[in-house]
Image 1 (cartoon, rainbow over the protein chains, first blue to last red):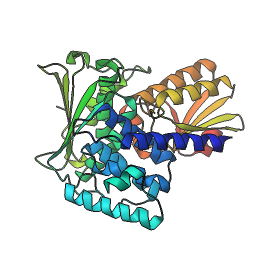
Image 2 (cartoon, each protein chain N blue to C red):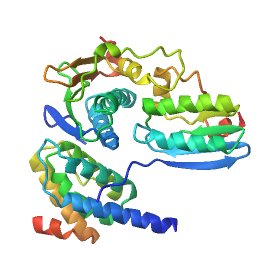
Image 3 (tube, rainbow over the protein chains, first blue to last red):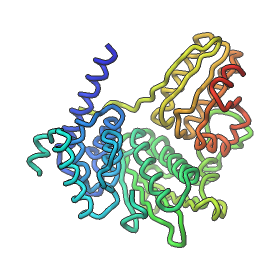
Length: 120
Length: 149
Length: 116
C-alpha cells in the first residue's frame, strides 16, 4: 500500500513537472510558473528516477538561474552526474552540455518527452 | 561547479513561498564556497540570508505567497567572500525593531535577528525610498573575519 | 496541477524507555512544523525519554531552533528527558552561535543519548 502511494505520488510529481516544463520559459524576472517549476524540480530530486531526466532538460535552458541550479541539482540526484552542465556557465557552454544530456538520454534508453523532441 | 561566478553577479527573483528557501539556500551555499568560504562559513552566510528571507515572508508579506523578493549575489570586490543583497516590496519595518532578544532568556522565538548579526561580517538593513526593505549581508573566510559593523 | 507541499521524513523508534526521532533533511520554516508535530506526538506516547537523532539534519534555521526550545520546555513540564545526539558540524555551529549548546543535553552518539 505504501509503495503504491509512493508510485502515485511520483507519477503526480512527474505529471506536474512535465506540465510546468511544457510552458514558455520566463525571462530573468521569475514568474509564478517558474516558482512552481522550482518546487516541482526539488520534489522530483527526492522521489524521481533516471527515467524522469528528459522532463528536466528544458529547465537547463531557462533564463532563471535558480531554475537552472535546481534542475542541475535534481539531475545530479537522479543520474549521479551533471554531464558537465554548469548552471552558472556561459550560454554556449550550457547549450553544449544540454546536447550531451540528450545524447546521454539516448544512450540510457530514456525516451525524451514529445515536447522535448520537437524543440530538439 | 564553476570555480568562480561566470558573471559578475547573479540575480534571482523568488516569490514569498517558504518552499523556495531550500533551493535558494543550496545555490547560495555552492556560490559561497566557490567564492572562498569554507563549509561552516558558507553555512553561516546561508543561515543569515535564510533568516532575512523568512522575516520578509513572515512579517513583511505577512505570509502571502505572491510577494516578490529579489536576491543579488556577487563576489566581494576586495577579496574572497560573498555579498548577498535582498530587496523586497513588502511593508516597511522599522529597523530599530531589529534588536534581537537577550539570549539568556530561553524561549522559542526571537532568535532570527541575533543569528543574523552573529553570522556575518557585514549586515545592513534599511527601508527603501520606493517602498520595501533592502538587506545586505557580506561574509568573508574565517581568517579574515572583521566583525559585524 | 500544483506540486505538493514540503516534506520532512522523520523515523520514529522505541528503544527501551526512549522514543527516538530521526528527522532526515533541512529543518527550516517550511519543515519545522512537521518536526514540531512529531515531537508533540512523541510526548503524548508517554516515554520517559525523547531522543532527537540529528545525524540526518544538515541544516536548521531559527524556526528549527525554536522548535527544539519549545520541545525542551514541554518535556520539562511533562518531566520527560530530552536529548539531542549526533549533531552535524553545521547544526552544532548554529546551536553554539545561538548559545543553545549549553541548554540541551547533547550526546555524540545515539547510544550515548539513549543510555544517558
